[in-house]
Length: 480
Length: 96
Image 1: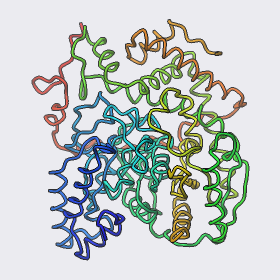
Image 2 (image 1 turned 90 degrees about the vertical axis):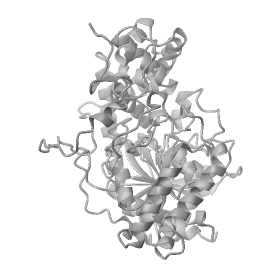
Image 3 (image 1 turned 180 degrees about the vertical axis):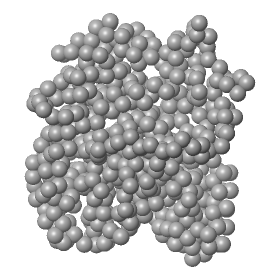
Image 4 (image 1 turned 90 degrees about the horizontal axis):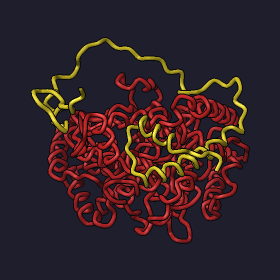
């Protein structure tokens, strides 16, 4: 068996059994990167020497019996908005073109403690603002399934790296769909956990009340395994939740008998590509055949999620991105007249168009005179959206729908009309507003051969129901 | 377009956002912000009287911990990221 086609869990097992080593696995990944990167451009940074050195050290620990976990020795790619000690962290922005963090994000440390080995940092939309990975200052990433198309975003580099076998799994972050949508476009599994499950310490903030780190993997087993290792209570993140039920791999059971699955009618209206619709409804049928109780219902308020999200996310972004001022780290403009001019010129030269657009909008909705009408209004609608989900989860264990209205668009077709691009987030965004977990799993391809994703949404802290449902679907499709 | 963003508003927001936009960027920003606000105005269709604004989905409280140093002196490493440094300090442009 080709080493690259192993899942993360299979690879760790093979290493443990002495069939291969962490170093061989890393070398295979680095060779693959060498071969693929010129086309795909999934990575901003790859540190070959460090990766091989680290793999050798981990291999020694495995052989000494000090590391025995399910990810020991497995090469991992990290989205470039998570701090990695001693390794360039750019957020795919010019303003952080030379930033070397002095510490690692808690999520990264948790993986390293489990013996996963960092390959490098993956490309993304600048500061995670975008749905195509085309707003990166370091070039676009191409979809490995069809290189004329985008990989989705903002975690497009992570999804592409998994799909192209340029890593065994990756971390992404999801503020409005940034893990689930690229996973869908690239045909891999991606999960956004319940808000507060994974520490945000060391994740460069975009919309703090919405951001959550999660895995992008080859299958559901890897997804549950990685999430189990990522989840931890962290006193350095004040929104971190203390959970006892993080044994997510215990939910890898092929059984959906009696599982109540709701399909929101409002997710299947205008704008949804018929091929996506068919694939998602066929997936619902598969689950029904396996014993799930599947029903349609009205979720309501769906069309209000996008304007609510863009108000809140832009407001939080305008505040979070104030720290990039050319003083303590990152880019500083060359010529300026005084402090304020330096700030303005640094930021104007350092940020790209989409980031500036959102900072401007965010500054406006928070400004005196507009704060109540826009920002507070959005927070009130958020409360209504949360209530609509509470009502739904009183009746259903899992909500099933598409991840995105279409499959991956062609490169260069999305950025000219921002509102149209934002509309692509319609099925993913309310999950972030309500703090819910959501998973994207492959459920077919369209006539062009582009992957289609199935989204399963659960109530807060109910990841296990999602994993169980996703696993059952994945197993039922095997051999198809 | 219902929301017309004038030059004065763009200037003001530019000050708040600490961004210096070129004339071309300003025109684009006026258009973009106007159409986004038109879109956001959709929220006005919903009656939210008596609904508390929800900033966090869980009841979040301040988390306190003892003020104890747990990391070592990292000033040298930290300053290495600074665009300009001198005598273990960040250098900023003259302010007065």
